[in-house]
Length: 551
Image (cartoon, rainbow, N blue to C red; front, top):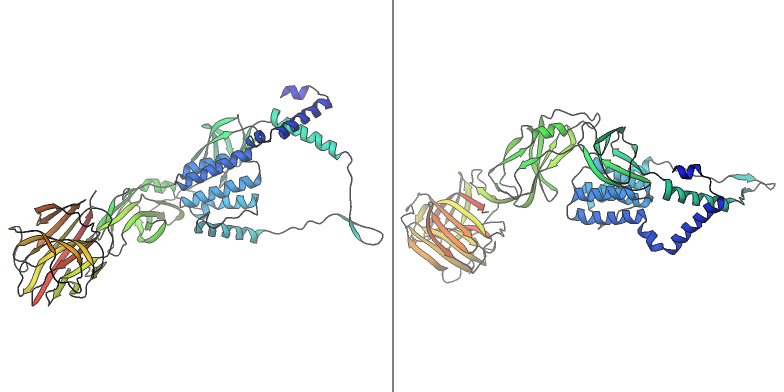
């Protein structure tokens, strides 16, 4: 740099340098385009889109931060800020966290907009709300040209002529190019939202707080920012010659939810342990006004599925690090559930736990409600006294179907049942568990596993059966035998269990394995309870039904 400062070059040499630079730009446009910082920034923005679509949010944010450091044009910087806001939205951050990026995008490019189909509806609403707030706050200023009156009192714009303007501009362009390519020092502008964070460069304290400008060398550097009450954030940035910028949004931090663990199966009407790191949570919750740590004494727990709230689990729970949730019978079943934990004192401080499944159930009828069970109309089904009771006065079979589709092929179904009334003939007519292919009463297929009051146990194949209007004939018997494992007679409880593993089915009575066989005609997906009937009257009770999805 000293060489250019101390030595005086003739004006002709300076003009010649400018001409050479102009010729290079005109002759090699492709090369110039490839070296264009804005073009490189756009490539990074496009790369970030592929990352956040794969839910690699932190990697996407790193790409966007790098693009902000490269971008020169306001439109490119605006786009990078907008994409950064969208990634924070996908991470589940509140609008308060990513509002700054939306405001910055609109400040840089007021015409920027979001298109339906490219962004999720929730983000579109947040963008429009921020844009509306900014429009309300703006006060338009109308600039008027300088006017002067002529003798006829008509206002005319005063024109000015600068004969040396072309020469001055040429010299300015040449000097600017010389400065950019030869003597410009690399600088890095660092900012955070909110501002006032301490800045560390390559682990060294710069003694500066955001916003600030750092003088550094070109290449990769590590920037760490720290603000009391917020989680420290560290970013790697590639500094190029000239001006570079980096804006880092600060988060309140997250607290780890360890249970339920990833991909575990939680059952309805069963206790579920929720665990979280209460110490980390207390350290990261802050007051939005003072940014000072708070003593967190209680938390709120919510149940989410696919980014939508399903129900409140508990409010004002003591921040002890654990809570036992008795899952209600009315909780829907399915996949991709998460526990959402928040701090009432600082609504911005929140976190989601791992994704788990709500599969299987423990229906004990203690609430005298048969949730999700569809009874047929050929029998009277009633949940009372802690049992599910069914009765009939005809010889037709009666069934009730648990109305949920199970796609897995490895599970266990267990039920405790008894005959409480049996008047007539047909002592081998069974109480049974059926695994059916649909939730239809008029056309269902599958396999039934049961026992009769006389001690007969059996496995039956059901083919397109109509339980409302039974067709002639009977189900196909696949296995039948008498067993001393059965508690015979009225009012004697028996526990019937069926274990499925692919096409292998095992029948248990009172925890005694009676028979295992391969059944491959159907792939049953629904669970049913049923009973055969005497010629006069039959009444039976079901104490509980458990369904567990096996690993």
